[in-house]
Image (tube, rainbow, N blue to C red; front, side):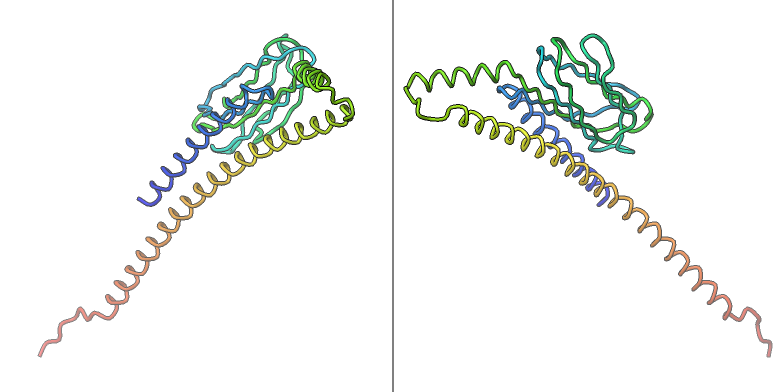
Length: 232
């Protein structure tokens, strides 16, 4: 009963983590950063593909992590809009890949679990797109606004460089936090799985020890029982 409750608790926590990750990723994806984080279940013996649209001369970074499932490994393929295979990973637990520059079109991200016929996998991946066009456009608008207010005494280039540095550090912090959440979920899954195994084999060993003890006591008592009747 305790083992069953532990497995249910772990499953509930993983589902909650998947929901929160998807919500956070989609919320961030609506902003100018174009970040998307997604957690999904990859069934046994199947392949799931996702598509990400990019513009010309952007930069795309793809990072994935297997959170739960037997072996903690999947296959990963990244295809360009023209069908050219850019990345091919086989039975990896995690990976990070960068495409710079990108071309205009839809990149295809495929996760393969065909080598596993019985175990499904929980996979987290994140896509970060740095759009230079939108970024520069926003900076130019901001610069024109400030210049229209006659703030010519400030070093605009220094301010813009510092703001770009802060923006890049914030994006990197978000990526690191997302991967730390994925690592934490995987470690929690391994902990729950190991706890179930330890509990199961402890119960088996305890049952064997009790059985051996009962058999030994019964055997010793039979040795001292006098089965011969004394006639008087």
